[in-house]
Length: 126
Image (cartoon, rainbow, N blue to C red; front, side, top):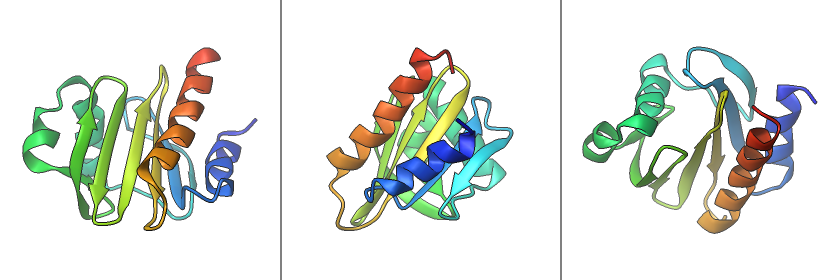
């Protein structure tokens, strides 16, 4: 399966409206759906946040110029919320998956979808 198919499949769930897959270092985009593209500073902030979340905790999480309140940050997952929408970010062995969910979608539904894709990629050594 191509990387593009993974991002398209996230959108096909109806719970994610934008998604992107970056390399684990955050230095290249592997696939994007729904127009999700981060500025270099935003993806760098996220990539660093997996290992040291203090910057995200003090400054918030930024995606497409929008500041999200940090909900969770550890070495696998970062969650953010802005009003009724949010982002779920999962780091695997080789990727950073980012899924954005719109207003009207429950955070738990979106989280489950992105985390399951992360689990799958980890299981196949990605």
